[in-house]
Every structure is written in C-alpha cells, then in structure tokens.
Image (tube, rainbow, N blue to C red; front, side, top):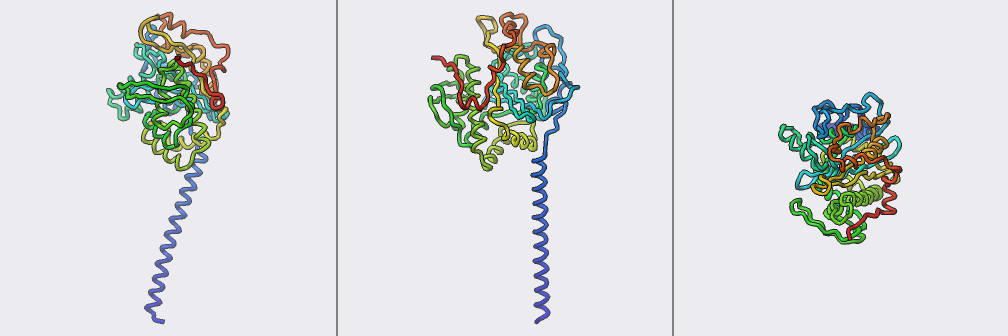
Length: 402
C-alpha cells in the first residue's frame, strides 16, 4: 500500500476523531447546562424578606397626606420585626387602559403556597382615596404617580409609578406587597386569542360607546367563545349593571374563573410559549423569569376550590350627599379583617390603630362618607368570598338594569 494513501487515511481519521470529540463535548456541555437549568427551576424558591422588591421604599418621603388633619409621615411596616408566614407571597396587579393612564382593573392577590390557596381581592375603580390632600378615585392614582415619575426624570417611569402606587397601599393598608404586574389591555386581548378564546355565558346584550377611551362594546346575550376583543369588552362593561362597578367585578370573576379552568385543562407547551412572548411585550412586572416559572408551577398545583375571589366591602356615595362625583367608600372594619385573614404576610395581626391610621380612605369632615367608612364589622365575612370552582358551577347573579 502506498505510504501517502496510508498517511491521508490516518489524517482523515484524525480529523474525523477531532470533529467527533468536539461534537460530543458540545452535546455533553449542552446536556449539563440544560440539566442544571432545569434543576434550578425545579428547586428554585423566591427569597422574599422584609425588604422585598416593593418593600424597599418604606423609608421614602410620604406620598399621601390626608385631608383629615393628620400629621404627615410614613407608616412603618406593621410587623417588620416579626417572622413572615412560610411560602406566603402577595401581588399587586393592575390593568391599564390602552389609551389613557386609568387603571380600571386593580387587584391584591395572595398566594399561600404552604397551605395551597390563592385569594384575590378586587378593588373597585371608584374607591375613595385621598392623595396629596385631594380626594381621588383609586383608578386615577397610577396616572398621578406616572406623571410624578415623568417630572422627576425617572429612567423607568412605569416601574417608578407602580412602586409608588404599591407603596401608597402598603403605607395606608399596613400590608407588604412583594411583586407587581402592570398589564396593558391590548396584551390581555392578544393572550386570550393565543389560547383560543374563553367560553362564556354573556348574561345580557351589552352595548356601550366611549370614543374618548376608544371603548366600543357590542356583545350579544348567550353562551359563546369570546376572542380577545370581545373578552376585553366583557370585562370592561358596567353601564347595564345596577351596581355598576361591583357588577363589573362580578362579571370579571365569571371570566377569570372560566379562564383559570381553561388554562388548567387545555394548555399546551406551544400556547405557553406564545403567552410568554405576548406577556413580555405587554406586561410590566417586578418578577424575574425564575420567579415567574416558580409561581406558574405552583399555580397548577392549586385546586379551583382553593382559588377565592373576595368582594371588596363598601358602598357608593356622592361627594356632596346628593350632588357631585360618585365614589365607592370602603367598610373599614371588614377590609381590616379580610386583610388580616388573607393578605397579611406576617404571623402577627395588623392592629386596628395601625390600619389606615391617616384615614386616607375616608373624609372625617363629611359624615355621609365617614359613616359608611365606619360601618360595623359584618357578621359573616364568608358571604363575601366565592371560589373559582363555585363560580364555574353556579355562576353569579348580577343585578341588571331592566
């Protein structure tokens, strides 16, 4: 055999061996990286302490000064020296208009992973709240914070606005908020389209127009699958309900319960990927990717019977008894009790003297508002709570305007 041919063959074999070694090494490294990444996400658990993502602003100057003659100052975190409940987290979720800065969807959510429960408190958009000595509907507070962040040349205006909004609630409700999510309603509609719509029984014909908000609602009564656009119409409709905003929140309970059921029964990997991509474009959040994966994983372990919606107790009132703007005034005793039961991250209770100590959710100079605020504690708070399972099975009776 020719020595040159033998040399070429050996050279070719050596070259092939080198390529095989490189490929094998690359695949091995890739497998190790994927394995460690998967292991990280499986074992990962958020480490939230007393200075979590939103708790770090507790020493900032006061954002809110009541009009009730109370000296300004920041309420300290109520139980900051006490240990937290195990695997108990809170979230502040806000839905923003596609046109303006109003936030008509405002929710406080607790995720009690240790006991396997999720609790959702929907805050009415018309809730009375004093900010910088003036009464406001709570759905306008984000806009105030946004404009303030803009004037202060904040690098991330939305993040600064959400931190200030959350901090305002922390100070005056004596709670700790761990994470926030700011959702653009356009992104909400796109996500509904990605999952193929949500099957709903629309309780009545819904028609409403508001060109200033670019809001056009036209839905027919009956069972149907709502696409993204129709789903947005459904959750924003309120004009045909006797209790306007409360009726809308009940409708949102119906929709979210149906959405949860669909997500848990028919979601696919490709759908999750589409939701993740859309969420990245339209949801601003303080959650990291690892935290999102952790909470989504734990969410799928929670039974629908343990996902509870809590009606925000209160009553509607006008600013001047029979005239002026309409507001929704909280029942302080009920809200205090509900927050202690379902949204307090600490093991000790929030004392009465600490809760809304500056009375920013009322006006003590106006008895018709203050009397609502000081309504006695309800005899049975459980009447305010419905599980997603109950809602899917029994629905909700929403009073309609004939």
